[in-house]
Structure formats: C-alpha cells, structure tokens
Length: 264
Image (cartoon, rainbow, N blue to C red; front, side):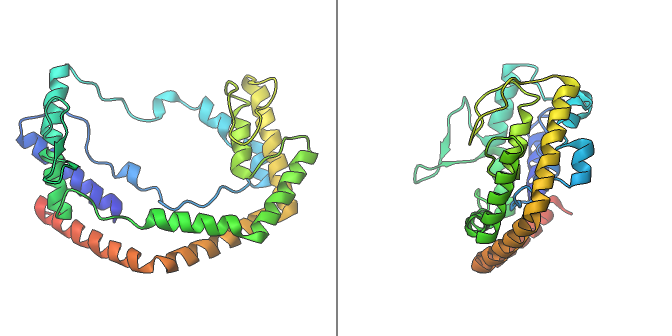
C-alpha cells in the first residue's frame, strides 16, 4: 500500500497547490518510483548462457538511447516562481524552517496539509521494512553455507586471474571499470589499464561474467545464497511480525482517509 498512499499524498498536494493559484510545478506523485521492494535480495551471479551473450548488461545500458532514459528535468522560469512554490508547498518563506511547539522542524503548506489529511499528522507511520532488511542481512551474512560458497567462488575467480572479489555484486562493480574511468573501488583494486572503449570493454565484461557464472555453478553459490536469504527473511519477518501488522493497519487507515479526502 505504500505506493498508493504516497500517490494519494501527492495528488492532495497538487490539488492544494492549484487551489493556491499555482499552475506550474514539479509533479508530486511518485507511484512509479515507489514500487521497488524495500527488502532486496543480494545479487547473484548471472546465468552462464546469458553471461556469454550480455555479460552483466553494463554495455547495453551505456549504449542505450539516452533520449529514452528518465524524464525531462523540471526548470523554473524565475527564482521568484520557485520561492512562491516552496512557500506554498511547505509553508516556509525564504528558506526559514517551521518548528512545532517543542522546536522540532515540521511541515506546513500543502504538503503538511496533505500528510495530515492522510496520516493524521505530518509524520508517516514508521515502516518496519528497514529493520526487517537489517535483521535479514545480518542473518544472511552469518550463514555458514553461503560464506563457504562465496569463499569457493572467490577462490575460483582468483584462479582465473581476477583479484579477490567479495561477492557477485562486487564482481559487477569491478566490471563497471572496464567502461568507466578508474577511481576507488570499495574492497579492492580496479582493472589496470582501463577503461577501454567499445567492443574491447564489452568483451572484458562478458569474459568476467562468464567466469563469474562458471565459478558460481561449480561452487553451488546461487543455491546457497537463495537458501540463506530465504531463511534470513523468514526469520526477520517473524521477529518483526507485530510491527509489520501494525504498520499494515496504519497504512490501511491512511489510504482510506486519503481517498476520502480526494473524494475517490
């Protein structure tokens, strides 16, 4: 329900801005950007057949049509127009923060009005997903089978001539430096001699992805990772079950209030 609730807050905010006499402002609804899961599984190695063709897909994202990616950035016609919008949106003039009776920063304006209509107060209910994610990741990191699989996979890649890589996500980070200027890679060195252009960088990316996939097959890494993650998430959800159900009830009520305020 999170994307739906945020969309309702955005629609109420836009309606309020129009009532305030504004007819030009950035979109307030964020449904498309809010559909990503809050608890994301660790990256796994690519399938061998896919790796042979597309590598990690890095070169595809670079060579894609730039006109088809993202949306046009909103621009203001004047600084005065932007200030008028900010004051209508938050109730704050000239960048001065609004505080409540206890001195804590708060929100006024259309955004504050919309959030109060939906949540009953300016602050949204506290989501337990961050705590679930942290709990799950800690349990996953401690899983011995996953650690053994990662160790065997890393050793396999070192035997293939690569530096020590921590996990498949680290391997993908390393592969990006075939295409991009060298810099600091967390956890280790970047490829020496890079970046390379065009087909050379693509071939190097595919070569690493194929080695990654083959080592994962030999180490049984994908299965070990999936089993460890599933168990970690199940345990984390069980540990935070009360908060999870409470949050669902709060968001159900928020969605109902918001829809009533919109007249839906």
